[in-house]
Length: 409
Image (cartoon, rainbow, N blue to C red; front, side, top):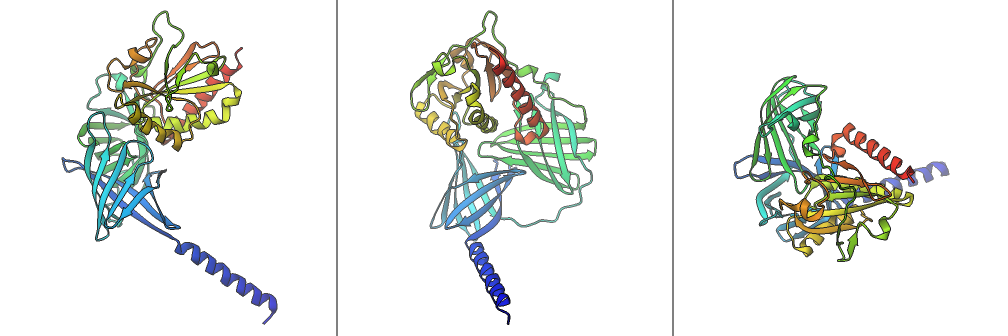
């Protein structure tokens, strides 16, 4: 046999061996999980378990979003999982290839605990979808009181698979996905804080009825929708403004290391500054932090600054810092994150922290100030990456606003 042919075969065999060796180190399985509400309605989500180099990694799947979870601990017949952000964790027993345990979530009061189970995913037979509901919908939730509560839904559909989100005056419901079984719609999401389930009957391609929105352990609200390509979200009801006679903010709070930081400090002088209003319990705040942290890293040398004001579940400084550290580390936040020491549930939270402005109604919100320290713009009703083109429009407007302010003398 020709020498080149022999070397080629040896090389090919070696390559196949190396590939096989690599793949043997990776074991991937897909799982179906369920959070069991007291009323019997389960909030489903999917995750992928991957084992590589003796380390187990879990990815929670919400349509295009893959949340990496690497704080996983196995011991004998149990598994313990801590979510990368939020006060959220799982513990479960392993038996017969299934997990059975609880989801634990921090709240303003006591920790909330809900039964949780998971098994390796098995494909099920679905009825053919009766209708295609892709597109934009005008949505009415049962709690809506006026036209200012106007919300929309935008869906993508391929066969029985459905994905999209709801956009409301206070923000979006992030990445939702699910199935259409005949005329039955089911959409859900789980990110460690949000545990949402939307069900409904699809009347036809232009009408959705008998919708129910399940949230967490007890939340339940009706909804309906009609197809409307021109439907818009109205955010006037959640807008913030300066109070009469005010033009600047004046605050100081401790950062995560306990150092007092003031908006009047030298680092903010002659800079365009974004004041980020957030809470470590808030998934939409997570999306905004990912965006703002990346923008800050790339633009701080241009004279751009940012500072976050956190409103947490409690006034316990150490608890707040522990939760906010997760945000800081997950998104490599380089700007100051300050603990206001005021609970998000405090009806006087704005008066106690930012008395120059009208009430903070939604999280996240942001305030943009110019080089002279004057408030120039309020952003409320943030729409994140799960909203597709709405997120791109938000970013485009944000970039333009900052660029114009940076040009000013």
